[in-house]
Length: 105
Image (cartoon, rainbow, N blue to C red; front, top):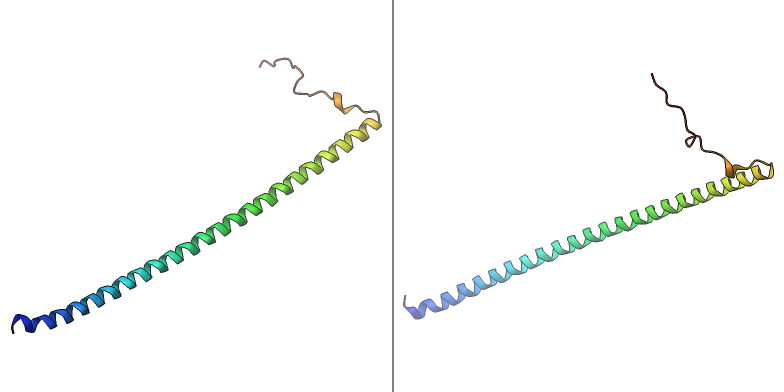
């Protein structure tokens, strides 16, 4: 076989090889695209979960504030009732402030 006879075979094999390379590149690109889509879905799922946790925490904090407000209102109402009865709760002494004699064993 001469050089001229080998040229068409070389071109045919080169075209076949280029076709295979293009298929491999397309497959790699499709795989990378699929991985990117999967990653985006995971990120969206995590963001959704974090948003839900944040909403739950906000709701919990609002409930705590409401309970504290209710307790404060009840306490103030009780103090007002005691003042009406003549008991001054504003001047109650703290037993921890009283000085005790030291006990020696």
